[in-house]
Image (cartoon, rainbow, N blue to C red; front, side, top):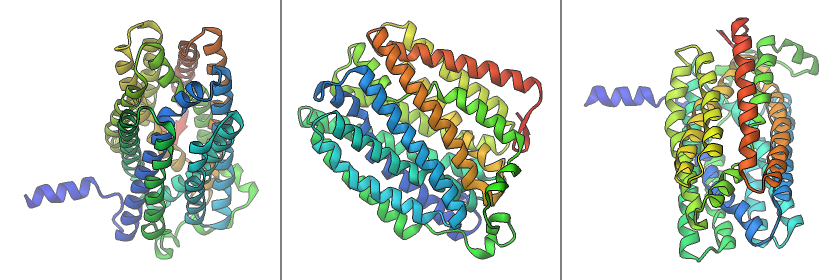
Length: 414
């Protein structure tokens, strides 16, 4: 029994330093409750915009694309600023608090302008805290242990999404599809997220960081020190993220295939459950094995997801599509963060994540616009998945091409 407990402790320990380990776990729980609050809103938001606000697919695509773009622009600003300030937590607190303040706007929205404003500000606040959070995880994690830290964080993040989707579905059923009530109740987990962050998360101790470049002064010209491997990672990311349009199109595809509105959040539960259980073991594998095979396999899983969403015209196919989409996210989301963290120096981590999120933001903006136009053109959300299939195939071909040239990312051959 003692041996089992010791093995479990080792499995779930992210840092040998107790304070850093506590902070890493606190960040993970902040992500859990933040994810819960987000999915309580976003699992039904697209349906709210269609059914109550009567927006078109194109308007939905514009709102989602611009809001996500603004989020990634905030990630650029906050990542660089966190390097310049040499502080991560203050920016994470600001973004988390802003997310709490904007939640009532969803419940009060009565038209396109207000939902556009609420969605944009909410995503912007998420962007403020995202890059500093990733950089802080890298700061607190031991060398060669980033994969485990990012994996556990994304596991709890996905579990929070699953719980949020479950609550959203239950509340919609009990309240006869009262969207606005669910939006109000999302304030509770959002507030818990802020409290945990404020009390339990600490910046890295000076005695841990003093022998690293984390304490160097940030300068614009230091960007040239980012290696070529980092820039190749950005190219792969840009192509891939064009296929990662908003989850709203997954919900709308489920509705097109005959799902009841109250049951649609349940499909997101499967998505997040698979993502949660895939993220942590993938993170551990990323600390031991060559990441190129994991990344390529994850991209191919997304290509298969789009193919199934297009080719199988039965509502039961949604379950397979959600399972594969969750597997893709679990295999790649934490891995991409690990690759960014490894490919740069500590004092440039915020900047590296900022550039990463800038590229992702541009790609998601174009991907959502393409998804919206294709859905309108094909008179259904199936159009979005044709675009997703194209970009995943293109990303796979690009990755295979550079694999043959032995381009490396981090410390491993890409």
